[in-house]
Length: 80
Image (cartoon, rainbow, N blue to C red; front, side, top):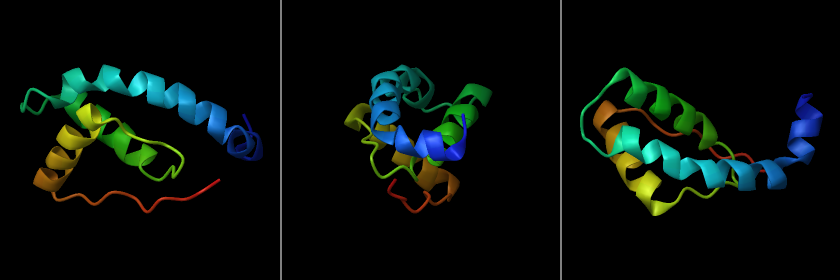
């Protein structure tokens, strides 16, 4: 998909991503850092730049705790 097409579909894609976000809780909630946790953190960090995306609390709280623990800042949001 071309960038312009993805940008135009941001509202639709944001709904799809938001629906999938609760599935990553299993990788964030244990407190242990595994390869899966690191992969989830990297993907979620990339998603923080999408202004139209709302992280549910069950994802955002452990995500922010782990990112602060790692000393890694979130990306600045960009609106489509």
